[in-house]
Length: 165
Image (cartoon, rainbow, N blue to C red; front, top):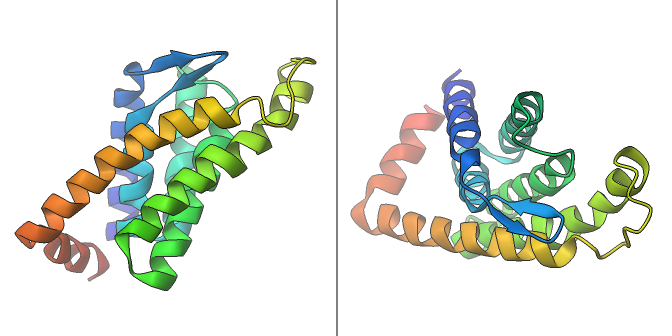
């Protein structure tokens, strides 16, 4: 139940912080979403991170502050981050999972969404890779700094223990 509550709070934060974005080409870059993706992947695991990313994208779309591109971009990155952290227990691996998952895999998965659901016939397979990579890089670097601070202060293990028990 604690993981669900934390995922809900992170979803609320993701929706609130979605007002902070950087337009890059046809997409909106949300560095705070990627920071939250990394935190969710590390503290909640891959499945809760995936659910959190889905709920955030869904609410943002319902409110008109997001686009359908948020679904593949955010969800794949959060899931990859959680999986890599689960199996390596290394923070750099989690961050790399977010960057590769969102920047590369999520960016490529946006192609069918853009072409078939958004009617962007000019979209190419790699159209969203660079904008998503830029967005996730900023947010992932912020997450790295935050996680290092939490780790050095001892708050990381305390929070991990608190959420898991």
